Length: 86
Image 1: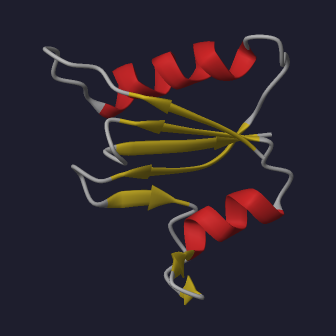
Image 2: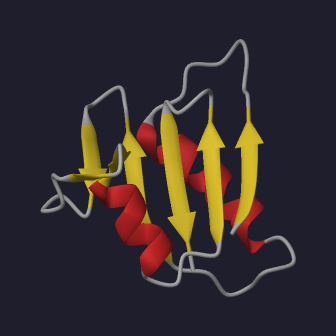
């Protein structure tokens, strides 16, 4: 899986802004992409929401994304937001 880490300073991000930034990065040289799973630390939410278990210390939404054709993982501001795309 391709992993991209982004740090954005001096700007407060919300989920929508972070997701738009992640999609632009995911689509670079990789069109088309589909968002498979995500995590929003500030709101304490993730998708798929039904996945609440941890597997070997890793959160279920993350394992789900990686095991459902996730090809690109984008982490913004030290896991404030994480997006996994196909």
